[in-house]
Amino acid sequence: MLDTKPQLPDALYNAAQVRDLDARLIAAGTPGLELMQRAAHATWRAIRRHWPEGRALTVLAGHGNNAGDGYLVALLARKAGWQVAVMAVGDPAALSGDAATAYASALAGAVDIQPWSGQALDTPSAIILDALLGTGLNGDVRSPYAEVIAAINASGQPVAAVDIPSGLSADTGRVLGAAVRANLTVSFIGLKLGLLTGEGRDYCGELVFDDLQADPQIVAQAPNSATRLDSHNLPQLAPRSPSAHKGLFGRVLVLGGDHGFGGATLLSSESALRSGAGMVTLATREEHVVAALSRFPEVMTVGVGSANQVQGLIEAASVLVVGPGLGQASWGKSLLSAAANASKAQVWDADALNQLANGNVSLPANSVITPHPGEAARLLGIETRAVQADRPAAALALARKFNTVCVLKGSGSLIADSNGRLALCDRGHPAMATAGLGDVLAGLVGALLAQTMEPFEAACLGVWLHARAGEQLGQAGRGLAASDLIPVIRQLLEELQPCLS
Image 1 (tube, rainbow, N blue to C red):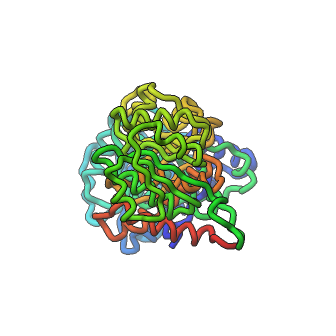
Image 2 (cartoon, one colour; image 1 turned 30 degrees about the vertical axis):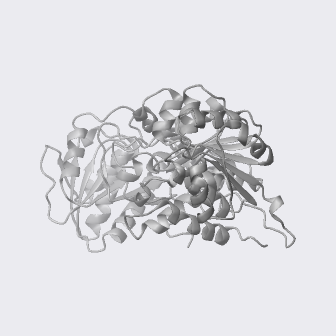
Image 3 (cartoon, rainbow, N blue to C red; image 1 turned 30 degrees about the horizontal axis):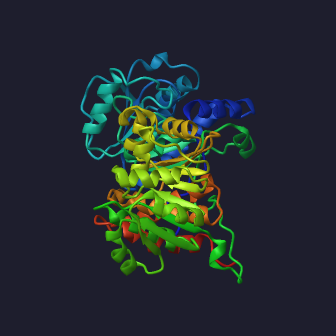
């Protein structure tokens, strides 16, 4: 089961790029007021679909085109016989351009427009429409908007947001001091990157996109920030010929599993095995060998006590997965040092990343690193909150700093390379907040590398499969175990990219 979400576009934009795209459309002959009217109709359709029993609307209108959208939605609701009230934050007479025209249309249509004066938003069963700030916000939300946002969030009423919840950064998904928590967000023209990463997914609710009938050729020519991964645009593994044999699909060597941490390497090894690697070898502490052989006899498991004992294994491998359960004691450091000196494609996770952050080792070429935000912060020498404040910038900075492919895990995982490519995965589920998921991902990416995928493509496909499997399993609720993902990943991979052509 590959897709359950409504279709969203592939291209993701920052606020400046959306403004540029808007300007291109207007310059090509679509009047700005017509785009605003289309946005209002799109919002009104989404509201009626989301709340089919709704009959009352309260619009909070600020300044700029976001407010203009709100006034036109209010007019549409008024014409449909709804109970409608608009609360204007600031003087609507100060509006200009298309927003002023929209305000005048609402007045002419007998829409009730009153100034915001701190009143409670307690109209029974009313849907609140956030048309306050839009994408133009740069710094933190200030008064009186901060108070209005607090009132919206405290109202207990259902909330829809025009284009983006007010107070949320369109570029980063960071909350700028305060942000509206919407149940529904209707985004236009270009899908904003910040809606799908960081805190964006907590604040936008159901996300609906409408391109406002924009000319596809103009859209294709406009710059964007990232690609949203989905089943139709994922990198492809080549089908296998009937005469295929294990030697064609690489040998993955998993290094890790110090005392007390054997489970991490078992997860990575099983994930690599089930994701199509031709052969998998596990080099771990002797105490974990019996458990590994009992769990999967197909993995060649070797107990090692020092780096000297892994040199031959490294030479025989095509891809290394380094870090799961590695620890930070001398044993793990010695194995990591041996891996760092090998010119093999590698996936580094967990304690391998901590040692990299400490400057104890250098990352080989053709590698993929898979940090969570805390690890990313240590690698960049900043605080975790700074990483989360601008996740796209952090992912790109890591890729450039280490000349690698970086998977920045978290809500809206990001994949970046040193050339500036950026991809985003908007799949996943809160049930995935459990230990061991990263070990499964590391083994999966290692297996894709072993099947001759390039690092960026392997990371993109691996992250999507991992997140989609978690999303599918998460529908059953809490209690998801990392090992639950492995058979589902295998099934998804075969549905998506059949083994035989």
